[in-house]
Image (cartoon, rainbow, N blue to C red):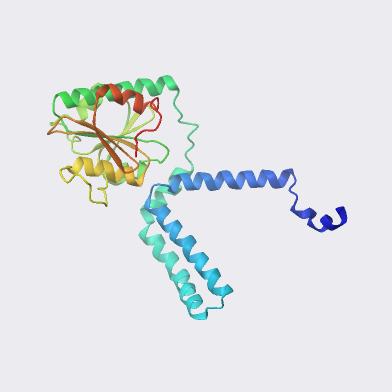
Length: 260
């Protein structure tokens, strides 16, 4: 039996093979984390489908289909680089960012969550509209660079209330929070590509849904008309949240951010 298995000995990995597999897996996982939730992940899925179709056409000797797919690969790469240039640029910039370098302790998360919840309560009480995006795994730098104003300030309820004051030049856009820092304000967010079930939703709610569809951010919206507090995550919007529910949700103490 050992003689029969001897030709297959190369299939047994040694420690170098295991190390290499681990490194490649970690890199691929990091790349997928960068692209997940963006339009680029759709491009990747489409590319995998086309590659599969190409190999099937070669196996089945479908010459016409094979020739068409080869032409697509020849010119499609250039077209994809042009169409998805913003996503690819942002993704490459984020590859060098380590979550470990900016990981927050539970105490810091709780403090930031309390400040955001307090600001949301004050803004809702004063009927001041606002939208606050809390960055998760997918970085939001590209949105700040494109249309926002970069900042570097520690998050506080007073600062958020000041930014969204009707007399502030940054009150119309969104505020972006990363860890315990306010890193951007006046940011224009993408509107949702889908028609919401509730057609009464305003621009802020549609922008919150749009960002939550493209990234994994938690996006808070305070309605100027109704003073209600809503949170969007992964394309789902939960409305009418009490201020007392925000801090546990933002600090990750309430399990899943939102129910589907």
